Image (cartoon, rainbow, N blue to C red; front, side):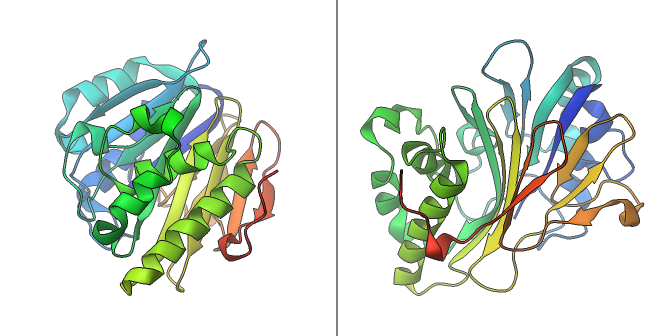
Length: 263
């Protein structure tokens, strides 16, 4: 499992969310408290949006807690929208190409969870990626495959439907292997204008997602609270997707097993 944190709102320094809080994402890379594994040391990544449409990306295989470059960048870079991730591999190699967030065009994507029996369905997962997007397939992770498959299934125009359909297909393939859990999914993604987060599982153990309004005037969305003020955080319920783009959150029911047909 992994940990992640994201922000949308007025420009702040990346470190305000990722580094300086008492239980920041960097701290969680060494000592997470709501994760199957406390240590998330199989690499890290940050995607941030500035004046260009596509995000900047910084990823590496070092543990986040020991990378001075990450702290230096986070101290200097300000952004209105960014995503940060620390990785605990569920089986695929520790490599830069397997570190989140993944990015294609203006989209960035990160994930916490697992696909049951992924080694047995990896070829099937790759086949779900359209030919015109396959050159973006750099790594071997289930997360990147899911992202690219969703892009090919209409993520640009119908994020909810594309993610439901893709999750349903991955869950169906995982069920065919007989390995549990078939699918656990907490994901956060952005097209540079909005922040989207969702929570789903084929069992009753969907990975956690929390969100809160900040005094700075923006929203933080995280897989685990980064401070001791737990009352300030709201739980995103399993089976929900939320969208943030400046106003209050918009919520949608997320039902992969009743996936909406493509437009």
